[in-house]
Length: 68
Image (cartoon, rainbow, N blue to C red; front, side, top):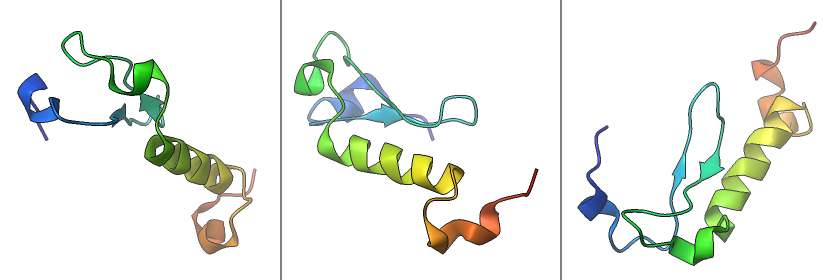
């Protein structure tokens, strides 16, 4: 999905997610810093949930893990 900076103008927080960068808060959008560059509560919850999933700490996602 493509978003232009003006699509995010009113955002209280925003984050990027990718395979190589699971969840990273965005520090500024077109020079405006949502939440002073710190991850907001929604971004932090998503990041923490993904970390718990990756580490096998959330039993809801046990089927996603591949034994090594």
